[in-house]
Amino acid sequence: MRPPECCICDREFNPQEEGGLIYFKRRPSDEAWDRDMKEKGYVGHPPYAEWFCKDHYDIAHDLKHLPIDEALQLIKDTE
Ligand SMILES: [Zn+2]
Image (cartoon, rainbow, N blue to C red):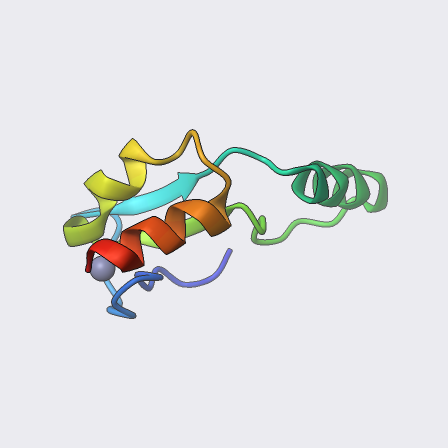
C-alpha cells in the first residue's frame, strides 16, 4: 500500500482520523491484475484503489460504482 496521500489534492493525511482508501469497480484489466498478483503471491496497491482525504472521500465514495479512471475524471471536473 502507498502512504495515504489524497489522489485529488496530493495532501498527506492520517486515515485513522479522516478520509480513507476507496476501491472502485474493477475493470477487466484490474481483474487480470488481481489474478496475476494472487498467482504470484504478491501484494501491492491495486490499480483500482486510491486514497482520499476528508474533503474528497465522500464524493469518491459516491462514485465507487464506476471504474477508477471515470470516477477520478468526474471528481477532477467538479474541482
Ligand atoms: Zn483531497
